[in-house]
Image (cartoon, rainbow, N blue to C red; front, top):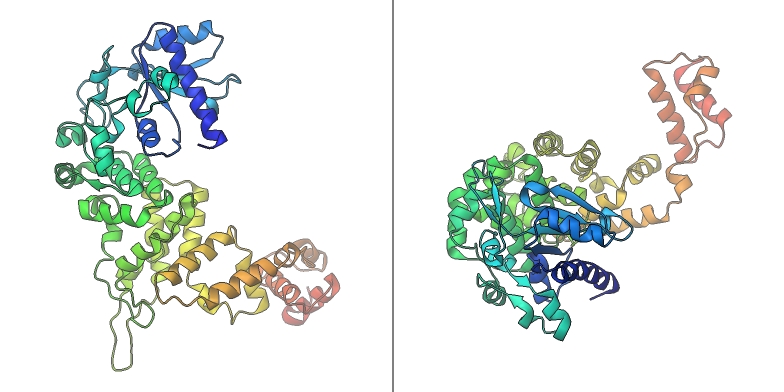
Length: 462
């Protein structure tokens, strides 16, 4: 465990131990126990306790620690770090028993409990249902001996299986999002989904619409950015969930591509192969750009029109941008994220012309925001198809070699210069400015005066 991981462990252990020393039962719970047993560094630590929220806050008030009641109804309290930073906070949840989930998202009511077993059996999957007695672990360092397992999570962890706790239909009926979470855990950990659990997913997949678009978006984004995107989306497809959350993706199945460019197979196969190259920790925008870059192909498929012709997808970029815009709007992406994802879809085919571009056109291309993501998408696109990388290496070299002042120089001719020269603002302004900027980027002019002379030659005197 690295230094940061050790600090996070010590912070959470301090919270659990403080509750035990105050006379309560407290354990590490959930994913952090799973990750510790797998030898992974947990992203965060959750503490489950017999103390009520009011008792938790009282314990830490006596210790001079700030707490925040973020979900008192569900028994959740954040214990802040010594600097009162929420970024250092440890989540503490009271043992509880959940009532009915009438909306398929959250329990209508909860009843606090002092029984750890009762708390565990209402959780989602066995591998997330184990507890760690921190005091026992601190005493002798025996991780296995300090684990409490009421649901068979340790056996499933060893077998590499994601299994719902108890009746999977009941677990997924309670919270439909658990179906997506189950797929994500299985993909990220390289596990299989237990047969009965998977059957329940397939049966209840049409009900995933009860989950908010935002929660669906976050789960899909995690799948794209945790390093196992291909496996995740193939499992989504097999479970029937993909047809519910992204029906546009399912249409890629069976859409053939010209073998001279895409020997790998149809559009769905190509997209899955591309997702396989998404590295853990990649940006959400790159992940979604990769997923949606060819979403316009099914609607624009055109078979060969005669001897010597090939399969074509005329206009698939423009159609893909429109479809992607609908998807991103449906999932309520921010304007900034939407803009970048659409830019990735809109520009992914331009690499085909990169060696033939005028210098000004090339520099405009290279200076697109987050151009590194465009490069990364093109690399993945090639690797999932013909494997020819000369365009990628050319663009990468030009991008890395171009100084910032070459990509975004201080313009010789501005709108103010045009007005001062007697031109009235209007539709021609953009063309005038682009003419001067192109000439500057290509090295054909070297001053404001030369730029204005070029404008006068093309557009007349102002």
